[in-house]
Length: 299
Image 1: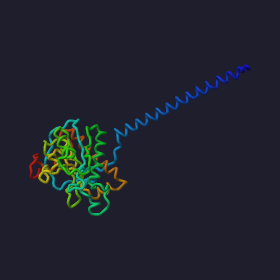
Image 2: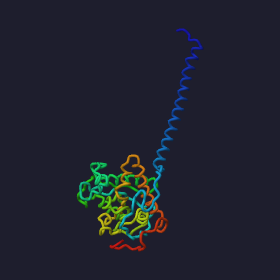
Image 3: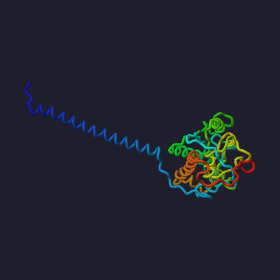
Image 4: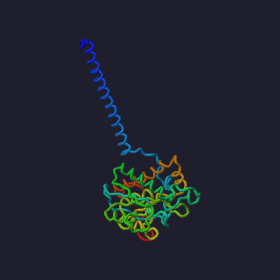
């Protein structure tokens, strides 16, 4: 076998080593780039999850440019029981288990008067928007480190009020454990609706979360319509506003829908956060009326 010249031997040896070295350098650089991109992606995901960009929202007022008018039948209750910062808050969507029933919720002005198509044929428009705001409240509440969660029944129609999976049944059990139960609603359009406001729970003392929500949205009488089924089971019913223009138009318009939902949710989350972090006499507007007691007539 002929002897291979030394320069060829060196070349045969040197070239593979060079290729290997170059390949290793390229691999290291590639891995470093991938690691950098992964870290950037993780940081972005963390930022999106914990520090969401807040939309520009209207300044609260009365009447409110976002919510509309507060309830025309105000209550005079005051919530004074302190709530711990780690108090569990459960957010429900009103009428989530009563579709196809008399208590299905309002169809809204667009459907009820203008005869437009509903947002989702399976449900009244009120529930559609209740669910959207509920999801946004939980998302933004978690970003504020609130101990907040959502509950949704397994079916849109549960005819037995005492079924263990209805909002009412879940609220009764969870409220007894000390959870704060908030149910999102939109009130009927004029002239049937009353406006924005909180109908607080009846089965427990009123607390600083009730007070904070009352300052932010308004107060219905505690025994509104003689005492509703939800509040008797521990639910605070939050009427966001009447489902009519201009609020309903902003919700239905694809260009303003996301911002409107987030602004509504931020109003709720701000009130929840103040309710667990402040005493009832710190900040905010004073309660409507001067009587701190609740009674069946005007509580």
